[in-house]
Image (cartoon, rainbow, N blue to C red):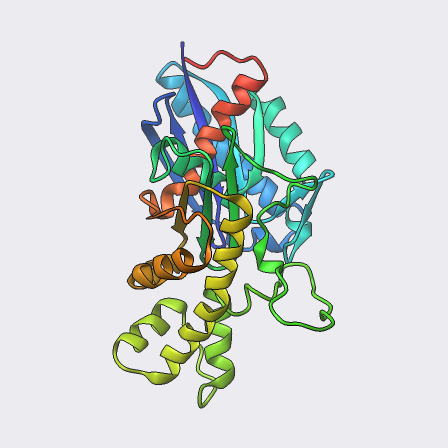
Length: 310
């Protein structure tokens, strides 16, 4: 019986599930809205279990077995709990791991979504063959991942790469609630939208995509919001690269689509300040990087637990 590997990508508004073979070819895919699941006690965990369970009859029909499950979550899992998210009640990682292992009889790997995206880019994307490399995700939030020695660096608390929490101003830091970081507040989807709303007449609420479009149309306020974000992001990128010394920087995430126009400026900045500037690439998997990476995480977990990967 052939083995398939399941990847689950948990986004802000939807859950996506893919079943793929060991080459990364996706045979089937499902997507459901998260709805109110993130507001209920362990609602997100229950939604993931339901999504996987609903797929099992199809796999049985085609004589496939599950080799492993990989899950990318939009927060940090450590010590059996969810951290750095606005609603930690929505998921119990220990319960999710045990429930899936019991119901499908296969290994389960869980990490955060940006680390999954880095795995995806390494396996089948813009970073294939690169080691070490840094993956920078500029999306609704802001985070990064370091891929080195054939794996993504996790850190002591699985929180390596949480650059949203970098201090960006001198002086005493203000108290920060989990889920909110200084750097993220100026350069991310949430940050750009919040900044624009705070200074625009009538407190107009726009998405990052709309802000980039208005800047292209000559809106000086929108352009100033983007410029402010870049003024903080560029030094942050340079600092990451100086510390990690990668051969490649891959930039992805939804907001990165608006940043592509600044490719030359980014390369010029890091080339002028970083001792050994890496190559710059933009995500080739786009919004599917996390899903592809979750499938690869399933394979990695299966190998680690001595399950044969065909």
